[in-house]
Image 1 (cartoon, rainbow, N blue to C red):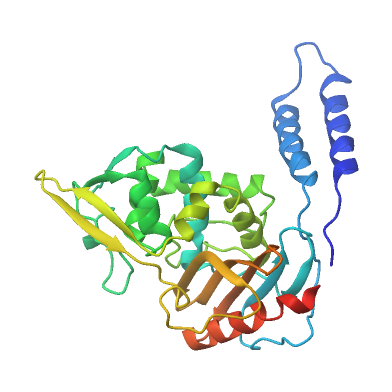
Image 2 (cartoon, helix red, strand yellow; image 1 turned 30 degrees about the vertical axis):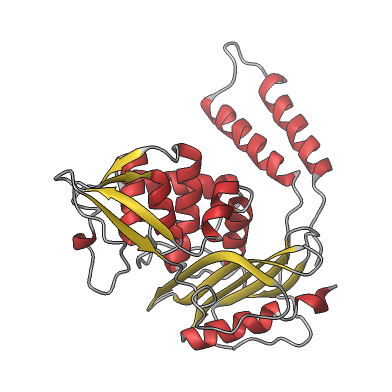
Length: 323
């Protein structure tokens, strides 16, 4: 299913918005309601002008069925705008740590890589549960935003996510509002996040299609691309006592770690993993075929990691059949 060319809709929305504001002047300009909706139309219309993959229902692909227990899955051709495969992509799901791609996007837009961040007690690794993935940050640690982002996206550090959120917004709650605003601007309207790390909350949800929209925006950022494509990263961290230590973080993806056989249909550039008991095993990847075309592949809610990578490999292997 192809993407919809929305240029005409874009122009119409602009015209309608201008008429709504200027054509019915009442003394001292527009009401707050009109202004808010004018601004909303502007950013929505600019997104309508983009070529985005669109599918209102499931799309099958020959040779791939996927596991029926999956929450959702999708394969999107970034270059052509074709939805090659779609399974429950508009159903509400829990994203687990795939949340962190939006955390990274908001951070990249609201900070500088060289910014020095001081870790609070609530961002320290010791404030998380024993089963929660952490990068090992300690209260009083200082490190760059760049280092935090590498730990966030490669090693999926929940502590890094909180440190980033608190630095930018002062609290995870305020940062979550920024995340939701960013999601809305990307037309990911079925997304509502309550934290920067994706630890389970019934009110923290999205859809596979919304995650495609968010990841599609992320891969336009060169720094994001550099991070997700890295084999590892060593961070220099200055402790509260002034001592300097190093921590090396590697990707959590089984593909990157050599624990899963690589697909033959395309090369994996990078992506983000996620897991909670409620979300299941999740994976979002950027892939490139032999011709250089880019694809976003998404599998959400696999019961086991084995199933996750088997389904993802089978999905990516179908890329040559989408031509």
